[in-house]
Structure formats: structure tokens, C-alpha cells
Image (tube, rainbow, N blue to C red; front, side, top):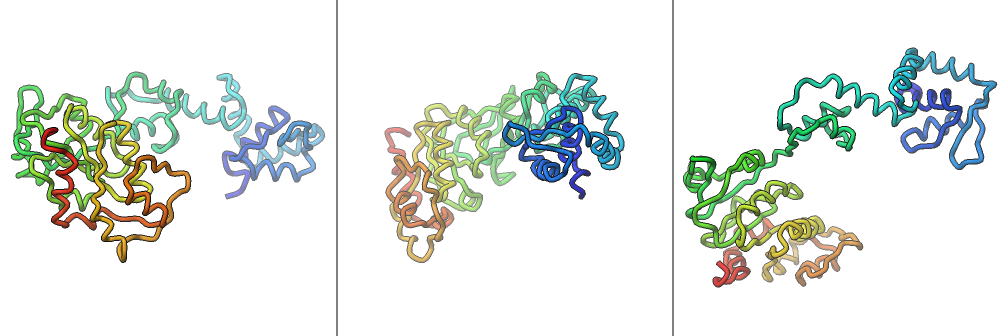
Length: 330
């Protein structure tokens, strides 16, 4: 695509025409550099700024007519609503026009759906100005929490109560959506002895938990639904079991912000798998290991990672997890 066929390039031309000057921005660097090479512009006393030589104004208009036939109308649209003729103004104009064309919105929307409605695409930044266009819409990320229920746990909403074990017998596990929590679904019945958060799916389904423990899948950084789960289990000890790698450390730090008392499951016998099974991968120098277990610090120093799946079938894992929650706490 031609440089001047892109929004960034042709908006640089329009800004130079309207304002008589152009600052260098990362998104328009190619356009700025090309204009700097042309005889139409000169450097100003300000760093990274070009000024239009008035003698070449007609040549700039000719280029705009060729690259962007409707540019005069677009400039007029921006000025009609008091927006600057530049990339920022262009983006804001798009936001305003999308907001003006919105149909009546429901009270709740997935954040991607909402972003697509008020921004250029669903993965765009949801700025404060764009949020204003959504008014009081309740935004959800619509994660789910997957559970292997503990005995005696029940699911309650309104006047309906279901035994979690019965649901798991039919469905294989219990899955609760973020919207269900927001709409009033609650955990009731006999509380679990402890809650075990497991990072990887294979380990979540295959490990044997200690008796009376509730097991939840926490896939990476998707912890929004886990926050809802933690609110349902006040006073229940929480243990996290994940990979021993930089992301695993970051996930523990993130989870501890939600649950300061979280215990980190790093069984000592995991070190037996370092020879032959550890992955040679670097650790970032600026990663805060803080009070990380000795095995984690040793792996970081040696540039090695360990996957939690190695322990999923180890018969010693159940006892190692139990030891993190003394019976007096259960």
C-alpha cells in the first residue's frame, strides 16, 4: 500500500496543509521522513518538527487531491466538531460517529463486543472517552472457573440448590461463569478443607487432590473469575500449584495480591526432575523472586524451567499438598 494511501500518511499531509507544520510521531515516522526529504518543507527550531514552505502549498494540495480525493470534506468534518486535523482528531471523530450510530444497548456486554461498538475494532484500547459512550453498561470478560468440587459443596441461586457432586457426575466438572457469579450464584453447603488453584489443564484434571479439597483451574493470567471464587470461600486456605518458570512466579505474585495468605506448592521432590527434564530457558534479570522457595531461586540462577505436569501422577503429591494445610486449619 502506498505511503499516502494509509490513514497515517494522508493525515500527515492534511495536518501539514492545515497547521503549516508537522511533528514527528512514531505512527507517522515514514510520512515525516519522506516529507523531510522533499523541498516543500524545512526544519524548524523545534526538535522533530517540519514547517511547510508556503511556495509549495499548491503542490501539497495536488498530492492530497491525488492520494485522498475527499480530503477537503474530511477536514471540514473535523473542524465542524472542533477537532484538530491530525491523527488524534481523526480517531476521536470516528469514536463520536460510532457512538452516534449505536443502537439501544443492553445492560451488560462482553468487553470485546462493547469495544467493537465504540472503537475501530474489538481489540482496541477502551479509553475513558470510549467508556463514556457506553454509559452504565456492565462490562464482562466472561471467563469461567472450572471446579472439581469437594464433598458436600452445593451451588445456590435464589430458591434453587444443586449438589456440586451431582453436577460434576453429569458434566464431568462444575463450570461457573463470571455472569453467573454476578447474577447471584453462590457456593454453599460444607466448605472445602482447602482450595487448590492449578495452572495447567492437564494437571487440573489428572492430579489426585487431598480429601476434602476443592480444585480450581487457573489458566495463566485469567484470574477474574478466581476473584469471584475467592470471595465465596472466606477463611478457606488457598494453595497454588503451577509451573516453575518466570510466568509461574508472576502468576503467584498476582494471585497473592488477591489472596495475601496464598501458599505456594513447590514440593521438594520436584528437584529430582531437574536432571534430564528441566527446560533450558532464561529467566529475566529484573524478576522479583522475593520469598520464592529455594528450588525456584536455584532454577532461576541456572536458567532452567520445570513444568508442573511432571508431578501430576506422582503419588507423593497428595501428601505434599496436605502438608501445606495443617489439620488445625482445616
